[in-house]
Image (cartoon, rainbow, N blue to C red; front, side):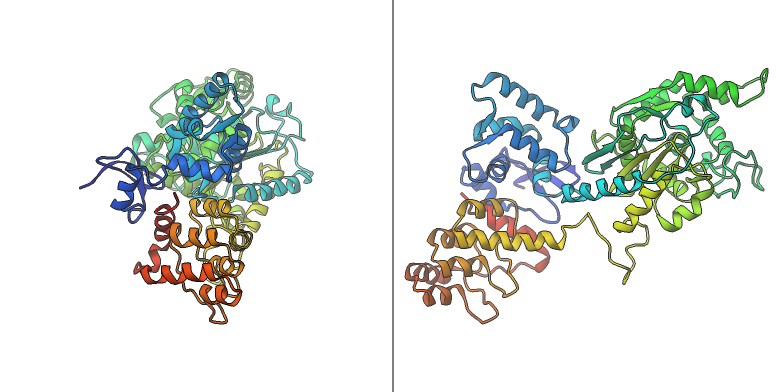
Length: 558
């Protein structure tokens, strides 16, 4: 009764206390209970803006603007992200109107971030689908450089506009379902979608007309024939929407018979990033595919227009991410496609999307993809991210040589293949989880801060949701180390602010009190002795450990 439901985000349900302006985000249970909410209202606990400031400031009273921007980019978010428009606009205004424009104190910082605080808090607390984005993108850059060395292939020359592209062009862009972005190479050069538009047209048709109606006119099976063969199946229908015959039928089903309106739809999928139109490519495509004097129907003209829609790697990666995100554009939050349209599209991309190489690609890569003769490969990792790889030289199957190599290497490195999650399967990198190295660093940093008496660092760790009771290989905690070193401030902070267990035992059955007594730190011994009397062990289940840790940290930090 003390809360009202005001909406939902990707991280959970949003509640607002009836008599408080702060916002609480919950997963399975409230992170802050009613007492904490009252303390926030009374000013005893920090707001989300305060927590974010302390996390970035690292004990300083002011934050340099460039430090905030650099930290933001390291999470994968861009300053041009439309979800951060209010924050960036306020930041620019602050830089123009303050005398010390390059530094932000706590009040100025809160003013800048308050409009987008939920997204920023998610980013800096590593709650996005790829937590360690910098490490992941370093792997992507290595895969890019490896694929760049691939030679061979031939640029498609039966359309003169495509033949003009340099064979050395090579770019990869990715966008996660949380809007994390990364690009490397020639990712801002416009190129035609060509056959990469086929799954997008099919998605529009199913979104508008429904699966049953669309598949009255086109099948779902791989054809086993070249993509440009105009053969029908035994039911006198094109085999699937990913071959030319099926794509022409799908074009005739789309209600909006205007390339401009279809481009508007694709603009929404791309988060309003670059989607253009190549009139020259359309002209050559239209007039060179058929004998002179042939009576062309309007549907074929429209078909060629759609093949001539231009994108960049960056905008196309957002389109792929919209498919990966169940039809929601990750950088605008707008629903563009129905779940039914997305599911069907990904299924057909997986089975039929790579021309005559579809079976091989499904076997080795195991992900939905669609290639085009312009050299693009639209790749979808469901619930994780979308990618666009682009390099004009094609192999004998009509697929980008460098793009195929990149996709193979990506799945060899990361467990993105559809069947990599089988039990007892070979272990691969899972960028969706915090790595073991990160957990080791977490323990080392925590214990070193306790050893040096660095309360500011400990406060920063607690604000980020770190488990302040985690142990090293000898089962020693930060409280063990602080007690052994006689750091009174650290011991008080861990006990009173973080509410850690005061009597954990290490591998030798020593408690922090034993450490303080052994090294002659009687003031620390007395503090621990007094605190043990009032300490009440938590009765929460193990499943609630993360929420319990966050609550304990927030409940005493200030």
